[in-house]
Amino acid sequence: MTGSVRSVLEALARGAIDVDEGIIQLRRRLDTEDLGFARIDHHRQLRQGLAEVVYGEGKLPEESIAIVTHLCSRGAPVVIATRVGPEVHAEVIRQFPSAVYHARARLLIVEQEPPTSVGNLVIAAAGTTDLPVAEEAYYVARALGNHTRLLVDVGVAGLHRLLDQMDALTDARVIVVVAGMEGALASVVGGLVDCPVLAVPSPIGYGAAFGGVTALLAMLSSCALGVGVLNIGNGVGAAFLASKINHLGEPNSGGVRTAP
Image (cartoon, rainbow, N blue to C red; front, side, top):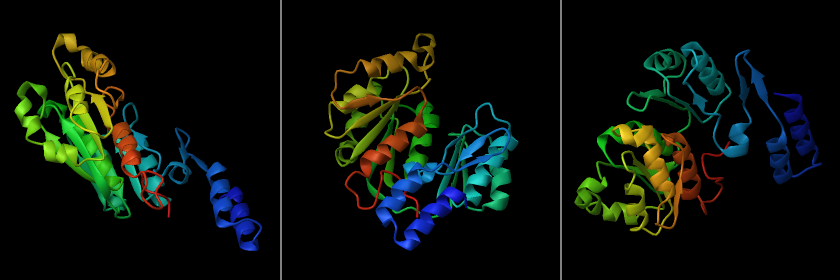
């Protein structure tokens, strides 16, 4: 325990501050751990309700493993690593048996405490090739404590497939739409529902799709109101924001899993 945290707890024990003030002060404290190649922000769980997400792209497997295991060792309820390979999971699961790897999404999740799920959060994937991004959003949203449903292959090329899912769409508190190609699905969904729609372009499509740029620009140009757009392929960011929206009004929740 760092000295700054101890001082807050001592002040709380003396009655110099109340619990609410103690939480405020703890959120303002910094608690970092220097691994040489990374400085882990252990207070992100307290400030934002979710431990620091490990982005594996460009990291050596052993670096991702070290960060994940240090976060887990400090008691984070859920630890997420994105864009990692199965070798990271193979090592992490030796120490933390709850670690699960989702191969298509290249996603590792370690749930050390079971979530209490609320609301209805829908992930709609335009096509099967959008599933790497959609599954990233789906599994992260579930781990953050949301009743989550994944709708697959509901793109605009076969609009009847989307309309078949209207019950799920209209029951949702928030919808994440993942689409590549021309990215039209976000506008269509946005025009059918009364909840927020988070659009995530995926890097799918032939040459003129430009690795998701065409879908991104189409989503940014949507004529449907209530559609917000995230970066290309950012399933984890969409899940985090969608979870915050889904948890609005829920007791004792800052939008995602709160620190114990």
